[in-house]
Image (cartoon, rainbow, N blue to C red; front, side, top):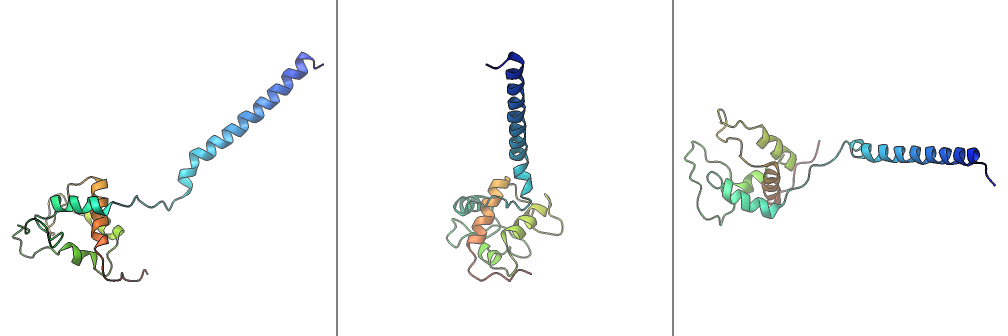
Length: 141
């Protein structure tokens, strides 16, 4: 039969081991998301992006050839249509996102202001533009 002190000591050691294992597991779970520094941003939904672009972008751009109305922007140079943008030699989802996020809210040297879209809506529009690519992309450097 175990004495009270010996039995309590064995339980204490076992409890400490369990606590240590639990602490290590918790630390691993907590730090796991930060160990992968190359996390890609969530891809957008091209179908939702088309719908958003037809609402937000057709005032200036030809989003699709069958859009309900022609762009009304009377600017000195007409903005490129989405198909032309998509087929630019160095156009990628990342380059489009960087460009669109870096636009000023009030355009000075550019004729395009920063779009008033949520980050999710912007990803969707970018996914739609990229879906229009018919030309091969330039090789990565």
